[in-house]
Image 1 (cartoon, rainbow, N blue to C red):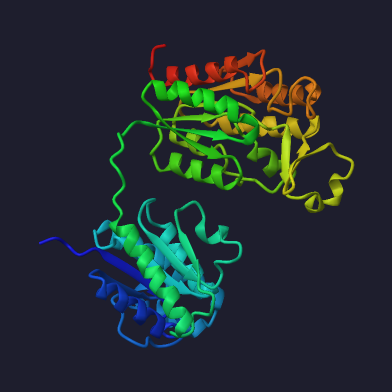
Image 2 (image 1 turned 120 degrees about the vertical axis):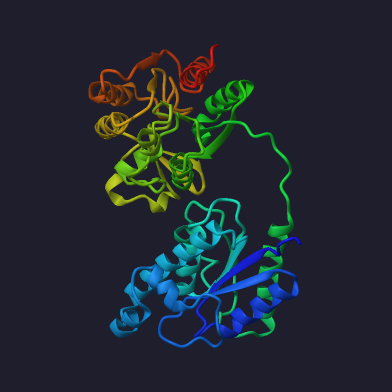
Length: 406
């Protein structure tokens, strides 16, 4: 007999009990097995859950009674979020979780999405939230979380919420029923790209694909870099073509597209072969011109589009960035090589273009070379990063690291 797929539902049954019960019944009526996890702290559940709040708290490192006695909401949310993540992981590892659905306001969203982020990519994840119309980045993180705006508060079933909840259940069931087409499994290579390095990455990607690799390209906008790092850390990747390291400029200088201080760390720690270039380190990203801090007044800017403004990095900033790159690569446990494009780091940083500043690029190159481990090779290519000769060189070096004879 075929096992019925399981949808795990997270919610606070002391205040959202009727909403969770409505969703649970819809899931069961559709022929799936609902498993309800209670994330309440202060009150008693409106109905008996499959996983009580006491278990969630314990898996988060504290007893439910202690949370109730301390009455510290910040502590309670941290514990229940960690507990929800632990519950989700355990159910998944035991083969008792096929999808996750959660309902909630701000606290419920924090807890529910913590559980979702603990699960692998591809597991259906739907969060019905009062916050879905705002900045969802902290809740989605680097995972494939689908957020549905609740429109009204999650505070009982009414004519509007009933439709929203029904749509959410329909979405999760559709995800469970949809089988992806069979795609040939090929070894994975990840690459970083920006609009200003698209030509280079596209050409290198073609070369790698011709040798049997699947190339996942990540847009270096902060989120893209974080996701790429997480895939490397999870052991899914055999090689890294990190030729658009621009997120480090935003991290150092203070732009809006930083991927965090851990950028460029995963491959080094995991020993994954990597080829690195300073792509788009000639620029720091801001939103519209009115978003640029006053301290940068008088700098060289380029309006990429009405919502994105680029600021040219200086020699002083590039010296700091170059040293940082070298320090990160010096910790590499696997093969690594650095390629420097002597005729510019982007489309804009080329002879005669808006960001062409050889002195600034030289400061970056010298900082990398002076700080890098002696055994890490540096290749200086007399080309712009987007020239085919450069793209071919970085692709062939990665193939060499991967044991492919050209």
